[in-house]
Image 1 (cartoon, rainbow, N blue to C red):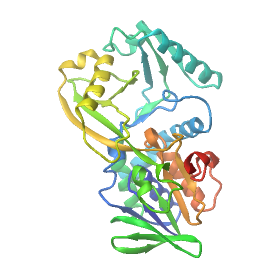
Image 2 (image 1 turned 135 degrees about the horizontal axis):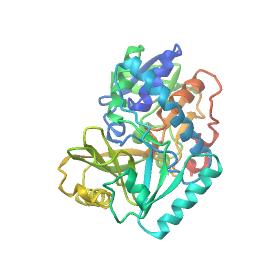
Image 3 (image 1 turned 135 degrees about the vertical axis):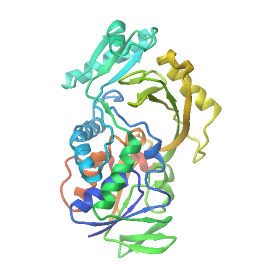
Image 4 (image 1 turned 90 degrees about the horizontal axis):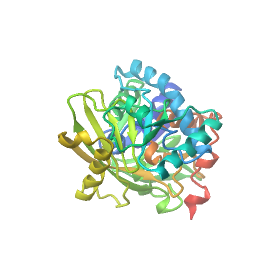
Length: 367
């Protein structure tokens, strides 16, 4: 079976790797270098519980993907020789006022009711885990099973694994689908038409730029996120720490990633004064000791956002066309499960997750 995959971020590369393992032959089409966009611009947070708005199909999808991560990264290291720095460190969501505490306790309550590990820590308990956290923090929700990974290393590892498994990478611009006999049979590119038995669109925020893929132009659109990296002599924290308006993600070498804005500014990739002010302000509120830390990198990236904030996964109404997009803030988290369910669906097997809530022809995307 020949499969064309449009997009070489972590999702596209992971789908190619899994399909190659299953006996398919994959060609991955990318206009730039693999992982150059959202995959490299992300933070690597694996926090389905800390970021959950409530129970439902999306949380189940995220929890299933988090559960896959330990075995996924072990297999990936064997396949690529790259350690992606997966750390099941836990996540703290710090609260600075009574309203925040109330919301945190409510989230902890419904999660514990469904058997998930979550707890409220008072100020002293929180600072016992993170001594450098601001004294203004009244406490934190603790989600010990949430985790982190170095997303840039993940990009490298998945690219290597896909190539070693036999996937072919082609640098080209995709201009649209090729349809014959009522099904997708390939794509039109700068290098002419390329054919395949199936086409997977894993183009992230650029999905809508492939004509004929989405039911409406606004079904997937870019949400810009601005990020800042600072450096301290030793890591200032061990957990991913969220505040009301941002987060801090430690790397083991003393770098600390601060994020992030959510801006609907089209494909304007600037890093702005306002964006940096917001990100640094949120970071300093969590860790005032960062005031003297040097800023070593700033960047922005585009997350693929959908109107209902759910990903677009599985078969399209057009036979032969499959989608793996719209992951918004959870592309890194959802990479393992996305690769598995797309592989199953393309090969005609029943996926482990019901993909009905994530279909491209759902109501929220067709309005």
